[in-house]
Length: 212
Image (cartoon, rainbow, N blue to C red; front, side):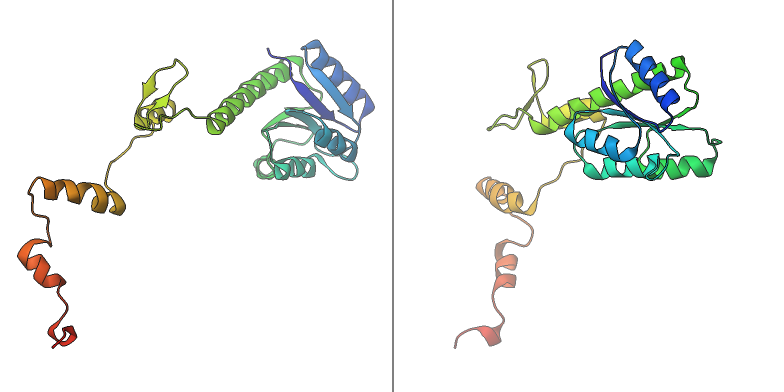
């Protein structure tokens, strides 16, 4: 598993030390804080993509910390909430609305922690790939084909379909209708609806508007 920078927040010193040891044993770089305010300062000055936070703490709790992280924006952060609370639907809904990604019960099980971090790693990597795609998409200035990761040039529709499954319908925008399609049809001698003698007559101003 890829090494990640993990920020943990827990006001219980024993639980905090045990969790820090578990994370370091799994090969991660860990910063441990005893309260949300100190953790918030660390988060804003560092590059932590995973946060493991206790829910119930004096002062600012884990849910409010998660809300702050989500409001900050930037790179996606995977937020795991630690709790002694009974896992009711109401509690889960409350946490999900705050932006929590996953839950772990205390005391933390080593295997469960490892599974959650593997999921976190995959989501963070996917988020990174999406950011790269959004930041730089090689596209031909003439035919508008897009170059994929294997250096093949593909139509925009094919490129997006292969990655998202999206399908496309095609039409003609008003600008292209006037500047592309209609001139080409006229060149081929095809009469367009609304044009011709009847169409020209229809375009003339009414008699009252004509000059005498």
